[in-house]
Image (cartoon, rainbow, N blue to C red):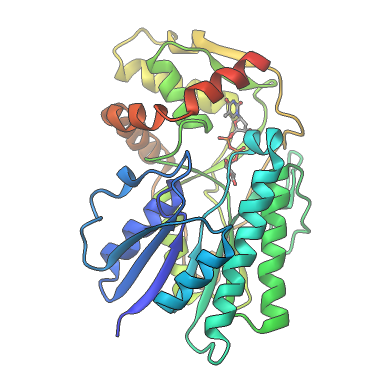
Length: 351
Ligand SMILES: Cc1cn([C@H]2C[C@H](O)[C@@H](COP(=O)(O)OP(=O)(O)O[C@H]3O[C@H](C)C(=O)[C@H](O)[C@H]3O)O2)c(=O)[nH]c1=O
């Protein structure tokens, strides 16, 4: 019988890349994508694989315990890759409770449902929790996050993810739940909701709108191509050691202002504009509350133990990403016809 794998949040940005990889690479698995299709979830992200025989989509909310319990009973999953989450730091500042509910309660609901169906035999089962480097807090100008770095979350978003990480580990220690975890740095690539820095800037340049840079733009992020993250997830799901955590990063640090300037120059070339045109749109705005200065990942463990390292050079992945947004204007228009435009205007007005 085919192994049944649940992927939560599979219609979202990172989730859709993981679903596509698993559906194409593992015809011997039945992949069930559970997604609530809230504002950032979009089935268009998966239209190339949605008629594959080993793929099933279920619309549903992980915060609904009754629904989650029934789903696990019906499908008797062998494995879970849990990516469903509220992920945008700015939204967590204006509405923390949504993050507590989805990211913490939702995770516990999944853990409880898995524990119930696996209680007699955990052999061959796996609960993989996908998380973020933001749980480690903010670095100064030097140093990198290791798997052993103490947690120090600073935003409601990162605090909710830290809490869910701790709960997953608690289920390992308390109930022998066969868990594995990973904490990854910022991702870029196709299908990212345009509230996040890179697609937001691309979209705003296209529409000659201001490019809001929080504070002085000196905050540093470590950027990883989303398809490389999906490959790391595949490797950890299949080869990671139970109870362990793996950090994933791109070894590719950029200040926000340098990244946006680079993006502006590439966009000017693609749009046949004079170099410097897009940079004129850069607008320094009020800083994000509690804005973490720098994230950087030490990905030695995953490299040494599992042999994973990023395969796509930043220049190549970045160019490919920009081309994708320029070629998929329908995708952008469709996703923006939700509540995003209104949300963005409200955020921007407040600054
Ligand atoms: C939207 C926006 C962002 N920024 C700054 C704020 C950050 O320093 C940087 C990236 O922001 P973004 O919101 O795209 O991503 P992070 O806050 O770093 O968090 C992201 O990467 C981690 C790993 C996750 O775990 C989050 O889920 C994911 O959203 O640009 C601006 O200066 N202007 C803007 O308009």
